[in-house]
Image 1 (tube, helix red, strand yellow):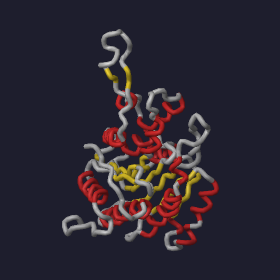
Image 2 (cartoon, rainbow, N blue to C red):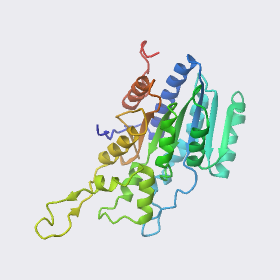
Image 3 (cartoon, helix red, strand yellow):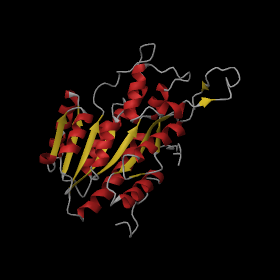
Length: 304
């Protein structure tokens, strides 16, 4: 299914996305409270390196980071999780920036009843998550992971490791606008950009997807087929969602598009469930949240 590019109306995308994430966390916590698991909220921030990739003119490829809504969301996501009732057993915040980790630690003062359970890790999100997924026993533990790779630092290896736990529900803020910007219309993509896309998608087949051969050109003059870019945000979103489905037990087929004030798509809010034994209810709840007005109530009597 190709994800649609919905609009947010008058609501800011920060408010809208925070409300959607909050709805899921509340639903998750209500369900997990009835189970015999220890469960955590994990926030894997993108860390530093947002401006590692540049355009030919030296400017950053990630103009999204200049959006005030992005900063507002980063400031709000941790607090949303800490405000959720029933509460989570642990809160793990991963951040590579020393300055940001200092700010995150202040949450222990802001939420004193949860302070002892707030863990702030100064680390690269990819390294920390892969190690955690591999070394921790997940038999009696569950988690919700939110990861926002604004600068495309998230690697496919990390997502595979998360999926293999069969215990972590994952929300991903996929930077669709930045990806589209890396896919230059002429197909001449710098080596650094290609490497970043390879790491994110976990394969090199993305090039054939986004730059299919036009075999009608060069067919009679022995020239190699011309490649033309598929200029479609829907194609990019659908491809990433299909890749997620190879690493997780289930994926919500309707990612939500987050747009700037001018209506241009910035990110896709995607959901993937790792536990094959609980994939149906997880996907059902996520689909409902992604498609509905977040101001409406979430549960029917059967859902709880």
